Length: 468
Ligand code: UD1
Ligand code: CA
Image 1 (cartoon, rainbow, N blue to C red):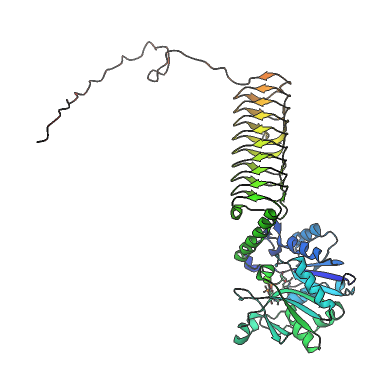
Image 2: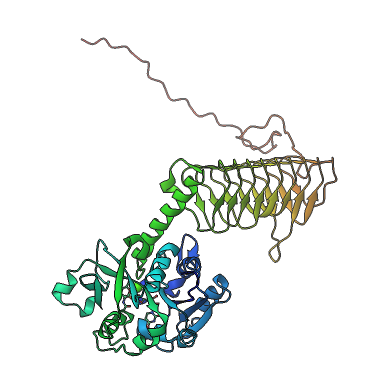
């Protein structure tokens, strides 16, 4: 089979009306990655020689996502949305190059695996002209039904066009199909649009092939692989399936998850060995966590790197560009963005570290703020190795604190602090003796009105009455 050539065609021209969204359907994310990128990643695993992506007019963002994921993908525009067969024909120029196998994959079926796409190719390698992926959904509403005659697949009936008896068929069309290259254009050219929607249905490739005495077959797979996403509810179902795949893969690779059902991963989350993830942690796109790190409960990470043996949270937020060194500690309610935390450095609670660097072994006290924004531009703060920043300090960037320097609590640091120096940038404490809350001051003002002593209310003597 490896010698056979293959063209993969991904259909992504549909408007996705049922999503009720301004975002084209195939760009909706699952585990932080667009549906289209998921599909193209599976397609890549089936080793096509060329990949075509069919988009609608004006769908530049979809074309862009396709090219980002598969740089040598050919993008074709379907001028009018006249159905799935018409969409395949939009890639005619690619089909005409004469690949042995043509794989047609829907952009809204993001859970498909490379192995399943290979099964479809394999069928074509064994003299089949049309191979369709079937499944038995819990709820078949909306799916095309596979009409079998013994082992032969003779037709696919769309729900709107199906008779009551056909609707009772539980084997449905997953939407993925492989066509024998040499007959593909012939079959596609014979598909008409006499149906309930007046569209050119790719599904009619089956009855057309049957009429040409060419063999069509159905391969079966699980519902989770071919869930088609038409609505936001189906998007959420697919997300759930994907999350479990990612959690299982992470645990399989040795990650300890106390409550995996509460941990949200991205398709590109990477873990080293012996990482522990506590409950309720969210990993946005672009996170790598090295060996032995601990991500404590309720932390949110995105575009961040966590070094070996580092500890994050609970309740920490690592934003894009956060890079935590080995054995560093980022405590609770700390936010880090575009900043490097050195090896063994410690950032205590309620700190904001934005744009800059904390040197190895430095200690950032609670409530420290990197004042990185002056209202117009962002500036950097650099804390040297082993420096100590007292709690509740504000470091007004651009500013540098040298190695082993010490900043007193509550300082507002606007000038660089030399290495080894003590910096104090705060008002001096004043103690005024004898102050009482009633006169507001320790010194009695001359005109102060004489204190009126209120007559004490006559206290009733408690008389212990004997109960009679
Ligand atoms: C389709 C199948 C149905 C199957 C189901 C599986 C047809 C006619 N029906 O129905 O048998 O059970 O998928 O999920 O094929 N598209 C275009 N151009 C168009 C129309 C659609 O590119 O003119 C693309 C869409 O972007 C989408 C895919 O084709 O990625 C499927 O279209 P959709 O309208 O979602 O088909 P379904 O009604 O779900
Ligand atoms: Ca669909």
